[in-house]
Image 1: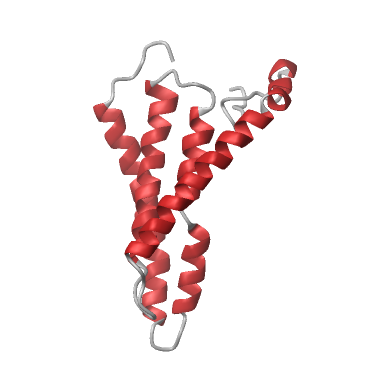
Image 2: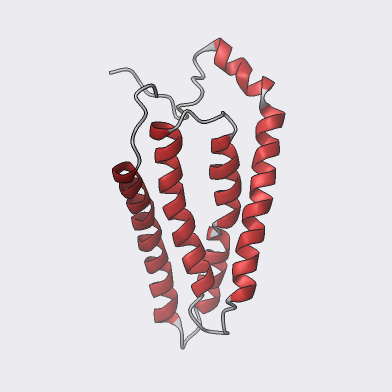
Length: 155
């Protein structure tokens, strides 16, 4: 069985595709930056709308990460199986918007901040619960989208 490339969009063993990485770097980085800014603004808005009380469960970050992971599952089906998407859609939406929207760095900081004598169980519940819910959300987004969206024959 031949080895599959890590990124199905670019085969690094093919010299033509290697040059594509250089030729399109600016546009790809540009859409990632734009999408990342938009995703981060959306996340910031949710954090402001639903602030976490000191020592409380960080619901805004939890639901942001779970929703973002669900949407990543949806997006991967759409761009790899259902659509013939423009080459910048995946970096814009996946890496940019959803990468900026989800925030596993804030998740780690909030879990660390919950590691106080009176909130240790909450910290571990948050750590494990977020990880389990995020993984389940990706799987659900993928499965639901596959059932609801017809797959293109020419993908």
